Image 1 (cartoon, rainbow, N blue to C red):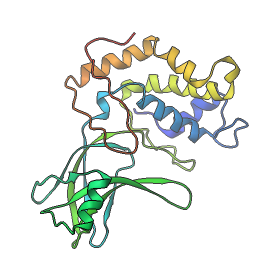
Image 2: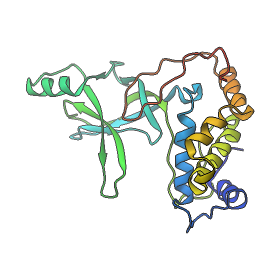
Image 3: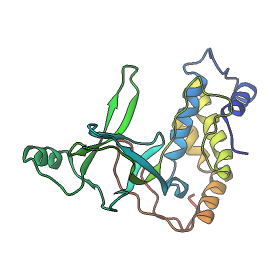
Image 4: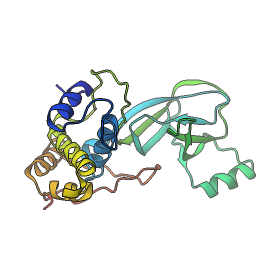
Length: 238
């Protein structure tokens, strides 16, 4: 069964001496989990992070679409009704098209983000022109997944969304992150993660990632966060 938040609380308390709340160290448990999640995703261009597909709604009068919580980068994005690809353009092209009142047959778009009053960023696809009609499931998105952050008030049943074969490595990354912050005199986070990549738990995760998903998909450098893919999938890293 996939790891959930309740199990991580137990692991953190018994193995890492981190309470689920009120930790005496610099960070709270959910912050350590999120740091570990991002670090795990950034260790390699994992194939399991490719090819998540979903549909998104188009809302009349709303010039943007919120991306999924685990969104990392667009691989393909089309209009569901016509199959027409939504063209992703640069900010300079976006500004030029708007000034010229250019009317595309579908939409052109840029990736961006908004920050709410609590400082939380939401990644958004900004559309031009502004939609004139609401279409449920109007956009089909194929995307590369990143880490889906958790909050301090998550239910214990909240799963992390990792493949089961990645969970042993995640626990070791979490250990490296916690000890790196709590006991940095014995080696910081970067040093511990570098050492972890020489361990069998990392090699095992890489081997399973290659075995279960034998064909790597291209990764487009789109989005405010970009994990560089490792294109050499033939050999295990040393």
